[in-house]
Image (cartoon, rainbow, N blue to C red; front, side, top):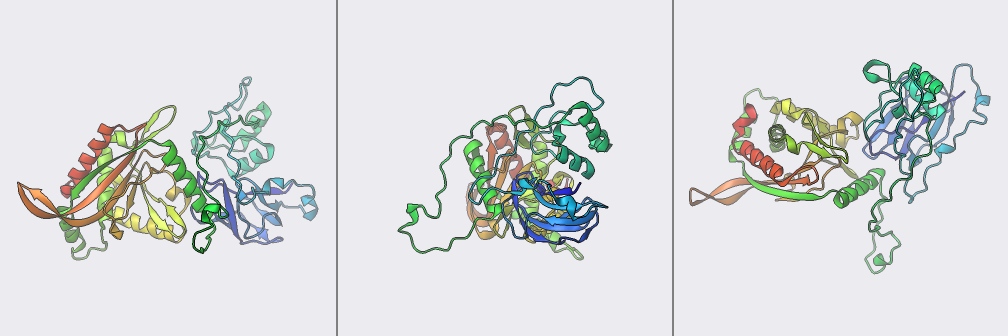
Length: 432
């Protein structure tokens, strides 16, 4: 039976994508690890590698197709010994994507494991939303063909990985068979955005209409939901950074220094230290519990063509300034080139957005769900300050913290800002 090649979900927020380019054509031999196609996701353009071997028998979704739903069939792979006649009757109807302008169907909630008699393969608790399910490519393929939910199957491989024997046992025990998804609760009504033909534009000047990319649509959806559903509140603090600037000049001016540390690198390190001291701010809200993360993974906002992406510096609290600087530059470069891998922009426990390089004095950011906080960084500029009762001039930077009030209280946010201010104004703490 031909192997169905499906549109992969390459990020937690991806529900559809564009098939930018095929690297293999019908009749080509495919080896495991060969690059099959390039997929434009909501985050970047990424290469998709083959996990099975065979001959590419049929391309279902043509090159350049847009809004292709995740898990729809994009091609059929003939296994060893099969010819074109094996393609007859293979159902590829799932490849039909939602028409442009219509919202893609919401992914069905992962079902809880059904009650069953004792069986060789125990049912597993469904993975929390967004959590990766580890399974071998063969296990995923068989599960897809048999209509099994991987979230309901316990894995017996290394680190709980689901392997073929787990699928066989689940099929024998009747575990994991997908049923009808329960009806989702209706989302709160939101004001619809106008369309191009809306009369509101009738008396406006002539314009060029730039079609919304997949990334722009996802940004609009996620930020609208965050602004509507997450109760934000903001706290601001002015930070005197003359000592920090002096330390930066000294570090970058050292003979033989092969790095150039930016102010943003100092901020990332200081935020990581402050979050370790104030763990209540390194948190996320769920309906079941408040999650307090044991590690600080900093998402840093990077502007790219057509949108914004937040690559993650993992375990920033354990890294030195030079390592943070190196990772930040590498991740920002890969983001702008569209070369980030999913593990490089997924996750993150706290975000930083810096517009200081544009001369912006202060601003309020929208929280990046499911994180509980985001720090907005303004420009450092000389301002009049009062010291010991006398007027003086200092280099001052305004930081604004936005937090989710469901999981972070005002006192916790204020305590974090106090720690952050102390670290940045006494940067020797960064060396401890």
